[in-house]
Length: 148
Image 1 (spheres, rainbow, N blue to C red):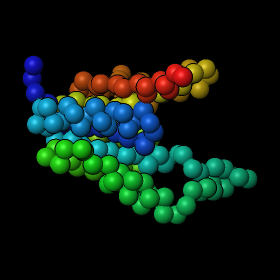
Image 2: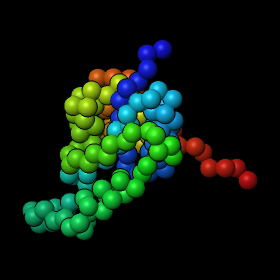
Image 3: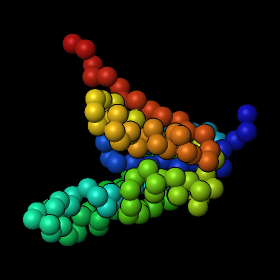
Image 4: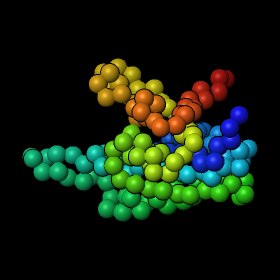
């Protein structure tokens, strides 16, 4: 098996993405790889059109808040080198661009089940990345809730 040197793990801070982060940390530790943790501030999310005018509905310091959340994500093993990157854009496009720019060997990302018309028309970010990634992609499903 060829060891991975750079592992890119995009996150949207969802439970599924956090599970992918933990797996990416384990893989980075096992392979002695650098972990690149990334967040994309979606340029289309949080803006709405009212009467032909684009209105921002999230706080003005939203990007800074998201970057603080990103920086707070640290591997359990302090020996794993980690780099935090935040970019603005459309998530799938930005993740693919980061994968190329960082020359990562593996992408580890969460997936969540979009269903119905939204998935048919748009496709999920993970699906778009899977189709076009320049490297292998490991997807992680959220664990089902514990049965009682």
